[in-house]
Image (cartoon, rainbow, N blue to C red):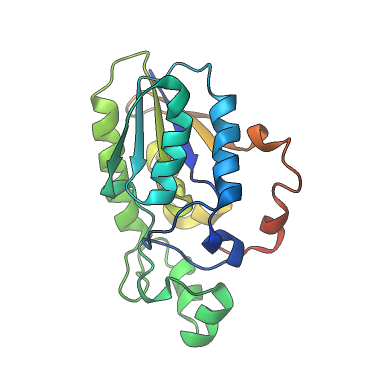
Length: 217
């Protein structure tokens, strides 16, 4: 069994302003770096055998902050990027619903098959990200512990792929900034032991306040 820590990146300006970031390369904001530092402190005594990340800076910086106490490098992969939202990137949900009437509702109801204009589908995200994670884990041996930093929608796709679930209910799984998910990876019969944990952020004031009104990010 390989233990996989699958972690979302820290907060960004796009998260605060509630627009779809997708493949747009946005850095962490100051709060996001603090969140990553809290996670780094929380995981400093966990033995890791590898650190990996999306090549987008918000995920890579999160992974590097967590990896720093372990004195390990972070390997980055494009396949772990967030879903490409195409023309919707940089827009809020309300702007998308007014600018592309009915499309985003169809997108979420399409069971992962529909693409945003100029973007990609959740099915495509699941295929590319799951293949890369399986390749990464194939380089490790039984008993290893692996850290991967990625993005909200991509992590949802990965969780569904690793657990053999259908994408029809993908938005039932929430993912907060720097949320920790832990999967015991056996290859086919995988087990999720932790999901969307932000225990490392409990000391931060109003840590999840912004999420109470956020829709579909």
